[in-house]
Length: 474
Image (cartoon, rainbow, N blue to C red):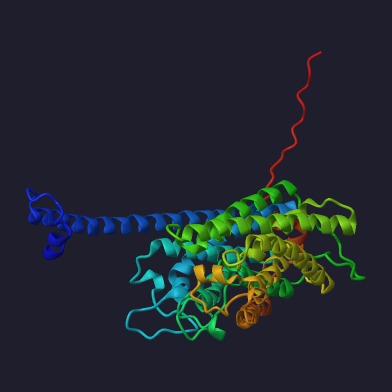
């Protein structure tokens, strides 16, 4: 170092001590090391704050689900569905803390890993990454809440609590481990031994979160049966509209805002190259939602000559679900196409359920299950190589088939869709069938007719007393 400094500074005035200058420059080098360490600390703190802020947005989506559900059911069941939404967060927090996070991401240094399920950190033992836990729990709460819409207005309260615990403690975490943990058999986040050399790309959870919740809701709706009077003796569908469109719109907008934590937040960082990924993801999320809403409006006007507000809201949410898997790896213009197709997917899937006499009051299974599966499939078609390289460490062939891919990624996406459906559908189907066998799944016809608010929750959600007008003086 000293020799280099003397040679490099030989052009300086001889009155300046080269030795002193070298000592000064050596001090600068030590200062640079200290500044680098400070920069790393600032970067880590900024990324941590970004992750926490995203977790808060995702958890705020629970308020959106609550408003959407409350507005979509009849007024006599408002309290019932709201308490289920609140307890999804409460029960889910405990279940995910005790069991869920360990099954999803749990590993112990020196202990063999497992491609199927996590096996450590139960109760957050030997764990300090608090921001990550909060973010992952908010996602688990969202998956659980999806089901409340599918089984609304006729499901026993205790059965719902049992389902909520089972899903967040075990069923959902296993899917998370497959796809998002670095040891999972479907994951794209490992260096080798990936499925078809690509793994499954599901950036923010079209499959992991939404399809899991949607398939669980489908199983619940099928097994609990339709609401009394939903289908006539001749098979005709009897309309049972929700009681408050204003709440539906409010819930839709809250969910849309929350999705900016859901999708961009899944980058898990904001400093450096991640900032471009986060911004692009937010743009794609916006465009797909917008296209879904406009398309749903056009579909319903073309078929029924009605500018249907509820259909527009469902179309927006369908677009959001559809783009969630590929929001970071597809070009923003393709998000418009994704939203357009998602609106048709929810429309077609909703009609199919009614044809099969499956009653889903909020169309949660079509919205989250069918559109979630489509979103995973969409990535296999439209993932761009350059964007994939920014987010995943994939080979060049791991791109959508319309962007130069050889089909390997599409194959991995299809395998993921099938396995999530079989895993969630099989376990939740058995769970709901067991409750039905024990006569614990559905409320009595009398309670359903009276309304679950009056029969189970102490009275109506709307206490509007009739007050006699004050007499006027003559």
